[in-house]
Image 1 (cartoon, rainbow, N blue to C red):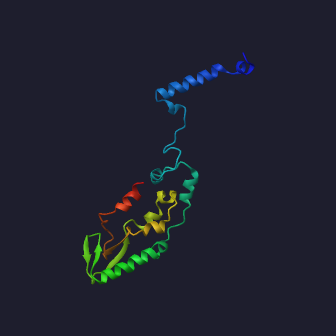
Image 2: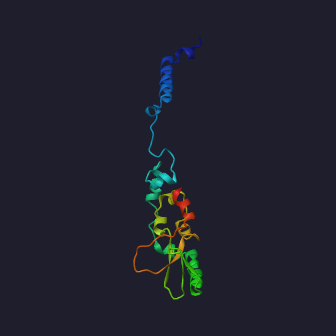
Image 3: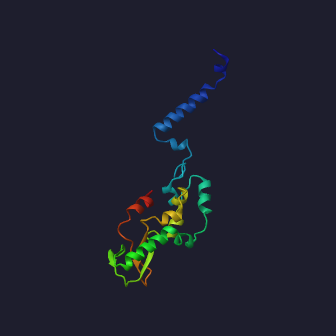
Length: 169
């Protein structure tokens, strides 16, 4: 027999193979591996649950820049939506998606985000995906006109198909 084959620890290798085979066959492989809640990959779903696979991504989220309302509300897309809505409002044809009605020219209105700008900014999934919060919050489907109200309680419009896919990823 060759020298290297004689020096090889066959008993230890055989033991390792048998233990590995038995534990994986009987679903006991958790004894061999260090499993981590959420796995070893950062995902949008896990990030939104506060579960991070890597410290790097967790730190990046924790160190994101502070929310600045002005960046979101002074954005050109938000302003354009507001000016376009103003023209429709003055003509009496501005749809209020919160109440599913058309607003008359004499009614006061606000332009509002369906998903608040701060909620978009603070979303761990957005940060993980490295998406621009200002751009995301001011997509065509998010800013919506609504009647000016004295109460802060609002009902969200029923059609949020674009945001459902964003929120569920």
